[in-house]
Length: 204
Image (cartoon, rainbow, N blue to C red; front, side, top):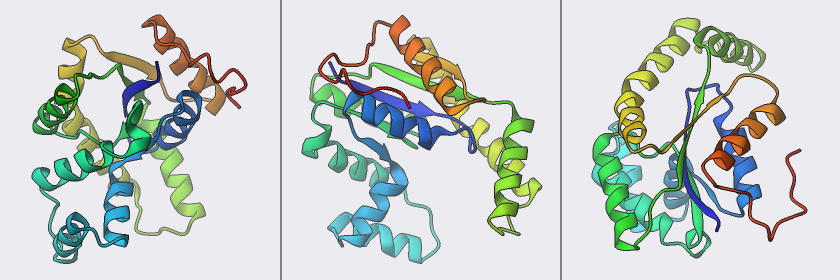
């Protein structure tokens, strides 16, 4: 098997780093919603042109368009045997749409990886990064607000996938390798192992 996963975690929890690790280990693409938007805009696809006009106007990209962008991405050849979605779904209606996409292919998710992190640790980490990068507008209040928005947005998703028994909850704080090992252990406990055809790939 390869794997069809979601990864959910608050800003600053190292979600992107762990997504890249899992992508390599399982031989599947790590797909972030922002990357999908940028790819379609850059390549001036019909969907990309529509997204650009919305973003340029300062509006939010509606669920319907986000859904179609994700559907288009999941139909790419590299996602045929699996994927790891980062940043989607964000709403219960997007959960339903993803369910429908997978049902059409007679597929389903294997697991939803949830990185949890102490708010104070994450805020301190992001504030330090902002100072190092000279992002003066990235104040502590702004960082805390994003944490609050994340918790509010994802609470229904956590509940939904928890009820389905799909959550693999992992402490996202600590050494990158240690967090990766926690994820691999959590997946193994669900019977999901790193593919045997990639024996030389190891967590670094």
